[in-house]
Image 1 (cartoon, rainbow, N blue to C red):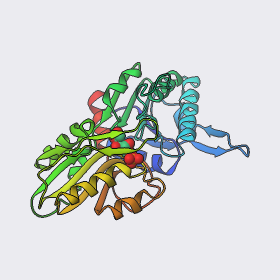
Image 2: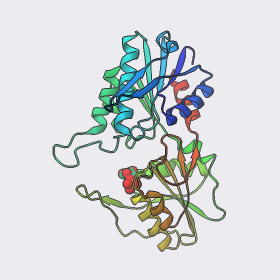
Image 3: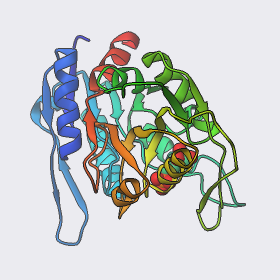
Image 4: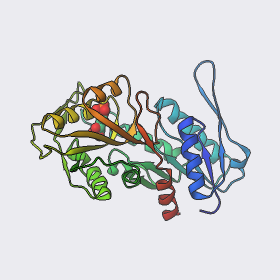
Length: 300
Ligand code: R5P
């Protein structure tokens, strides 16, 4: 991709992701300088190489603290626009706020729409993210917007347990994820039926008997936040006779006591992409920046 400078948003997740992306693209890399004012406001300063470039790929994960990450991304995009950089692409490995993608209750703010509009308005001509919660949300971005699937790249790094193994999605909405991972691993797939109480946020599963007796199960999802979904799914599958449970997710936030919940629910191992820094536990992190580089290269 000639002429692209990979510009890291400066936080540790974006630094590592952009180093791998730059290597895969054989592109130069620079980082913004960032600091926090005593009152908590964010400050960023562009490196000189960025202001002299015609094309800049800004890498900024909206990893926790999400609001600060978002403000920093908007400041970077706006500064690049003001400096006359003609082509600015936003590479956002984790797009926070993507799960509030409609009004579940009347008059709720549709957060993913607000975030995507803000990124576009601040100056990003195109947007690349990893495994957005729902692909349809990308239509809120008025420009080229791509959600890169991490599962094919992750499949190459996953140690599949010996014996019969099946890939299971925790709900119908995640079935496409199970299909992609299962195809990449050459395994069968199925899904559970999950519901969420929109007021309390509590998750519960409908009774559904799957043929998992004696099988190793790989649960696949886009995100682990509190761990509630995957922990409950794991307990159900083990109670139905599954031999072991491994988990594959794009974004392992693992907030609070999420890791302890997973361990208590019998999860043996968790694989996650390098889009956020897990707040707890010890998932095996897989670099998916080369997959984003391929998507960027393919549409350049
Ligand atoms: C929901 O639809 C998502 O795909 C995830 O299953 C969910 O957000 C995970 O959150 P938690 O780990 O808090 O259950």
